[in-house]
Image (cartoon, rainbow, N blue to C red; front, side):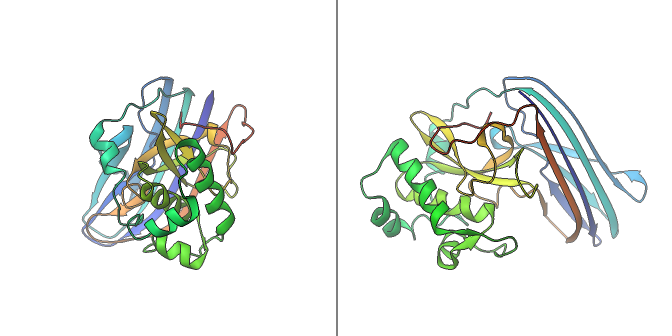
Length: 267
């Protein structure tokens, strides 16, 4: 499998702004090759970057701006082959069964048990995916950055991260380790960064995408974590910025046909 992805971001900062950028493909074992290029420019010059390693092969690029400036980020990558399955440690499985900022599994425990009763394993996985898919409407711009799974359930609408947060919270309520993954998703319409859930059953991580907007088999991981607070593609750790433009592309040599009933891992 060969996948080619790209991201172009333009933003403005105020003085003394520090930025964490997460657009690079995760460095996972198993790829035949990963050829990539990342350029960040401001005021006509290259911006110094510090690459930081995160969980699950994710990489953040850190930069600082002393003065207000306009910044352009351009990233491209071509990946051939597929990643090897991840073997999580016990601490990771414990971390991903706990409630988190945007996946309030403790508050949704009664809902999970009322809707999914004694379901377990693969049957539970498919039931949660189908329930979230049927209960929510995908509406661009309908949610706030502060909305978690509970707010999403109350409003019955959201974007990809909201669908993923609700699925994660419901699975954790049933003691299934679940996490959020930010991905490039060939076939996604409209094209953008995409968020999906991953659940650990039968000894492996499997993708859940309750939006049904893209085939899972060609998705390419960027980052993964407890929820979107761990996986944002652009965030400040001091100062502030305003995003001016964003363009994402993701292409695969052969686009798979999506089968929601199939167990699929991010590869």
